[in-house]
Image (cartoon, rainbow, N blue to C red; front, side, top):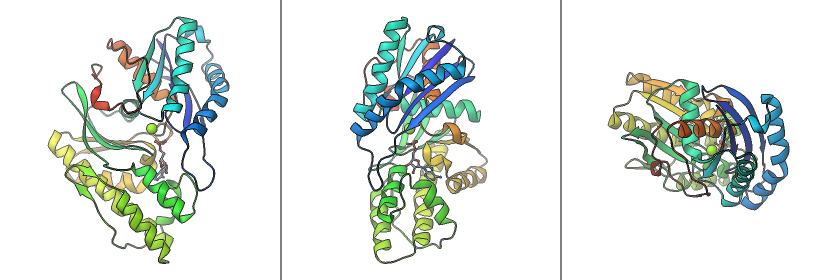
Amino acid sequence: MLSLGIESTAHTIGIGIADGRGKILADKRAIFKPPEGWGIKPADAANHHKLHADSIVKNALAEAEIEMGEIDIISVAAGPGMPPCLSVGMNIAKSVSREYKKPLIGVNHCLAHIEIAKLLAKAKDPIVVFVSGANTQIIGYMEGRYRILGETQDIGLGNALDKFGRSAGIGFPAGPKIEELAKNGKYMELPYTVKGMDLSFSGLITHASRLLEKKQKLEDVSFSLQETAFAMVTEVAERAMAHAEKDELVVTGGVAANRRLCEMLDIMCRERGGKFFACPRKYSGDNGVMIAWLGLLAHKAGNKGIQEINSRWRVDEVDAGWV
Ligand code: AMP
Ligand code: MG
């Protein structure tokens, strides 16, 4: 069975093709980059996606060496995300589904990150640290659903790093640059905010940006920002593992590319006799393959997904009957 997956929730328009065994046949993407110093404006990203959609679909089919008629299901990321961006993907999905008479399965973008990470990292029943631009959630599967055990109360970790990056003038995305700069930095104390199982990053970013205004070295602030934010995430992840009695941890989302974050989570897991996995870098950011794969899992479990976009769709609203 072949699934075509469409991702367009935020900065990336991606088309992936996968089969029922998790073999990846195609993966094509185009990424919208906002002008220097700006965040992503939804309408601009949506225009970018519309502009690239046709050629990306065509290139994905060519890479898989198949024609659209051979696809069995159309999977699309129906949310959460920016409404104008989500609509681009949903409109493509609807028109292809109508033209080729294939089922349309609207899946949850965050669950797609989780399932592709489990597939590729070969984890069975992990706590998931999902750290992307817009999202920061610690998630575990319990009794039929993925439950959100802890999450950010304000901005996502990736967006927090990018916001700091804008005040430092280091461009977008800032995460990789902060990681580089941090290698030559020294530690200074920054506000550490964990409330129960939830996290908060905006005060940390404001504080870090002020230190730059006070002429502290960018390397030192970058290092300290990473140490503080990642320790917060590691603390909540550890408590989630203990509470849910799970001994595997998977990290995914764009920020999972960060080696220092992975190192901290790995040390924590080893200290408690658990196992750490990272989603392979290539598939930890937004892509169409993960959407195609979750569509297949849902379809096999008789879950038809949703047929309209839902920009605030949470993972715990989905019956994860495929697990
Ligand atoms: P996503 O929304 O999942 O595509 O992830 C994008 C986010 O990941 C952006 O906010 C980036 O700054 C962040 N990111 C990418 N690479 C790294 C890295 N090496 N370290 C920290 N953050 C990163
Ligand atoms: Mg994402």
